[in-house]
Image (cartoon, rainbow, N blue to C red; front, side, top):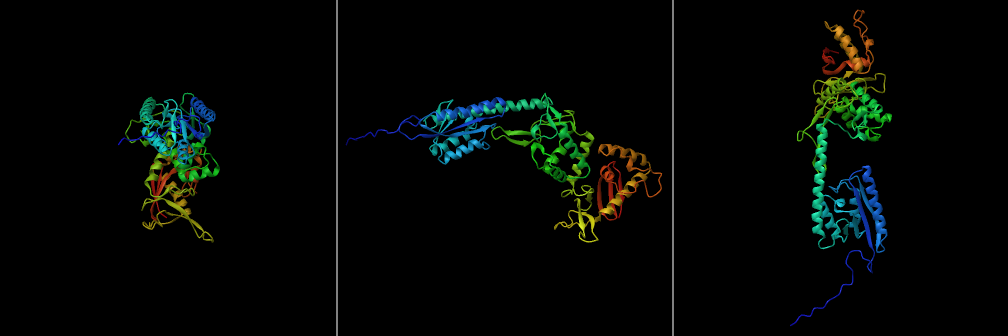
Length: 459
């Protein structure tokens, strides 16, 4: 029996946006430039202006908007807010067509590009890439898109490798650079190098001085925030990690360690701390210093000793940050006893005293007793045979190093009568002379001075 085939003619037009009886297509555009350089700014603005005029000039199209990302890489869609917002709106049915200048503007990652296109296609949203003349609803669209996306990805790989080579060549030549907008103390010089910004440098030197005087990074950050001093990057709140980073960055003493981090994957732009995977370069005398090498090295030694201890260093009071428990290694902190009566007194105790696991039994010491012990230790230091003249010289050097002036006021002369030349507790002497105090017991309290001398005292 012969088959009877009846043709049912099409009533619509090809899905290419031609004018006709079909409803007006809701059309959006996507624009992107990968850098924020001035020459790219005009390209970005031109794309936005062009697609706005182009879409609004079509009578069969309804303008939805132009979604854009400025200064964003196309290797990944993860951080492209404009792109992601456009896709989300498309999935909610707010548009029918997306116009883009080229495949590389849409994405340089083949997987991201195809995944997004297929997701939009399932939702009935078509994309048009003007440069390549690719419509994604076309039968050849996905094949061409795969080829063009792969080429764009290889182009991105080549650009990334060239940039990496250029950067490592600069490192090998000893040329240091920093993110100037977020790096306190330096500004970009005429040759792109580091030039000291004296206004910001004063804050850096103050941070180093406060730390050497016994304050912790947390306490320094709190004080700077309270005073309203702008943080790096222009923020109003200082973080203790920011202070610690400033204290440990070799660029402040005029040197530069280059290639501290490296890019693991050009697509994700993921970075990793360099622990030997790629070469590093240490440049001595790279640029003008903000603090002297002596001050910087003293800070590194103090950071290392504090890190070796347990718990957080207290920053409350002049004695803070220097008294360490010989039993558990934690730091001593202040506490007020009898705060509301006439027996009020300030004591220092181990930070692990109330720890439910450790319950450290190291003794509590009254602040006034500790100050008296320091005066006694100072006098014992000068009485050591052959040490008086050395101690005088050390006092002068340390006083100059930590910004205390000449330091002669701290030594009254060994010929005076009485228990010793030091008669009362002096804050500047404490800050400049004492490295740390270790409490092993009430009968064994050891003062380690910056010249390496250790004096043992008891309450």
